[in-house]
Amino acid sequence: MRGFADRSLTSRAYDCACPRLDAVVLDRFGGVDELSSRRIPLPEVGDDDVLIRMEFAGVGSWDAAEREGDYDGAFGVESTFPYVLGWDAAGTVAAVGRNVTRFDVGERVYAATMPVPRGGFYADYGVVEAEFVARVPDRLPAEQAGAMAWDALTALSGLDLLGLRPDETLMVFGASGGIGRMAVQLARHSSIRVLAVASGDDGVALARRLGADDAIDGRKDDVLAAAFEFAPGGLDAALVTVGGETAERSLRAIKNSGRIAWPNGVLPVPVTSPGATVSYYDGDRSRTATDRLNAIIEASSLEVHVARTFPLERVKDAHRALNDHYVGKLALKVG
Image: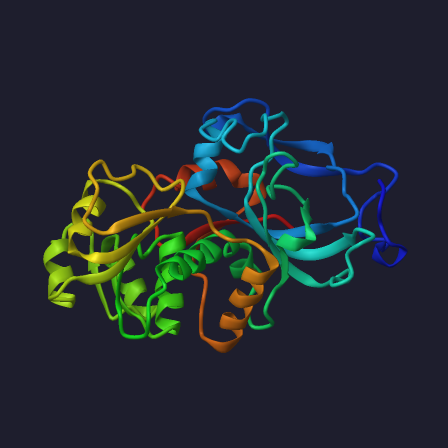
């Protein structure tokens, strides 16, 4: 191991003589049964990195797509095995690189990473650049922090892209899912009027509880009619977190002068272009973005609804549950 400042090391940090970690790995892409647990070498930790002892990790729909190989080569980096999934997590700082001065060992942190090329957070330790690490706000439980980063940051980036003013109208499509339930809360924090399109009675109830001005069930309600009832002259914007025919048809309710934010990776994309401009984007996970997010969390009642939490040894059950109906986000208890 190289590049660690003396102040970063503690007797509990990790075994420096044998830097390995317990992880859930893939030795090839495929179905749920390709997930297995074993000890693997700890990724190299550089001067600008933070080593995190994991407590909770988020489980998202993109994890299943990645497990099946859908992202292979998508980031311009060749996939290598063993491959560790997990894009967001929370835990405590175990060690920091020589150039890292803003974190101390033992601090509660959350992070957003990309599993390629150094591995993700389905492990007892994770390595990530300090730029993408943030302190957990005091009032936020570790379980919520672990399932938050990418969802909240993607929602925040989408709202930035839309640039709505207070009292303008926004449709959040997929409002009871991971990104959607964060978008509802962040939009209401900015006094934007929100029509939430959720899934199931429980999803509608969650969206209303999180502050949506109105909420409907996208599986059984007439979304287009509800949208024009909510905003007779047309909606100012939409943030779409679930693709498909219903989502595409619903976009007719957006004014031609309006805006549509569509995170990259939300599939399928529209077959026909709606009247309004569609902007495809990636979430910003920089320090600037997490500082803004933390300020909002501290100033609001924002919460991260975790539907179910599985122990790491039941990771296969967690991935199977991705195919079930649930609202919010799934999580793994790692530590």
